[in-house]
Image (cartoon, rainbow, N blue to C red; front, side, top):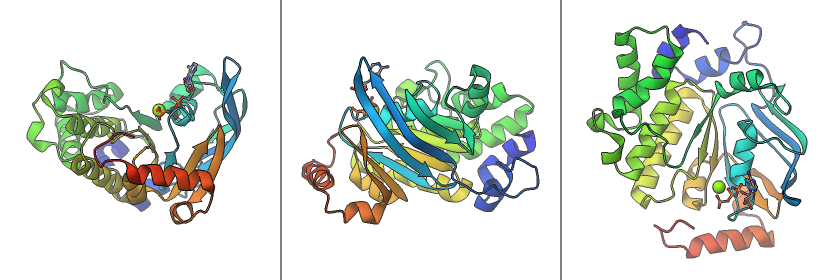
Length: 283
Ligand SMILES: Nc1ncnc2c1ncn2[C@@H]1O[C@H](COP(=O)(O)OP(=O)(O)OP(=O)(O)O)[C@@H](O)[C@H]1O
Ligand SMILES: [Mg+2]
């Protein structure tokens, strides 16, 4: 990734991003095939299977929502994708590259392309919002102070946190901290963003605002996203495709509309339970 790309982050278009960042041959044409592929992935802990033969894929620029009850392996799936956990069997590829068994160095290169937005935001408490977002830019290097501040300003505006630029994270609400965490994740200029339960512990209005941010990033930056959520309203707004995990298996993988219309008993029970939840509950 060149510094030129980095400078262009906040303003670039879908076509520009999809076309230039992942071309392996420098011709500017994106290679065919999905961005993320899980093929018959299994993992167990202490002899207890958590994922069994789970397969799914995410096309470039699309959003996959991973749904399922607590403990089915949603977070584990994200951690496998980040290379923090190794599956017992199966294949996981990112932009056509197998990542299972990849060296630590190879995995570092993958982690420059995929970022995870953690639930608590994992912001640096002693740094202002502005400095938190600037951190990945400074780490990356190659930008002068004016460029850093310009990109930081655009990213913070993008997530609607202009008014708290100079605040410390501790003074912000949970929703605001998450918005800032998204801005900081974007400063690393990822191609894929993973969100683990972005709407837990925030009220429906804040959840909607976070949803708007994720939507905007998809449209403006063409980012590929995986969103783990309990929140069906959130999923309905964002998902192109849905992976429903149930008892270790991919109980459903396909288009959102087909998931909602499914007559499968497990899916119906999941959707019914969701409908009974209070809007502000965390499921
Ligand atoms: N490193 C680990 N060592 C042992 N067991 C683990 C490890 N990581 C996850 N597990 C187990 O794997 C199962 C799935 O965990 P995971 O965190 O993926 O659930 P989840 O679907 O994200 O649930 P929730 O909705 O509650 O966040 C759980 O039973 C968990 O205890
Ligand atoms: Mg989880």
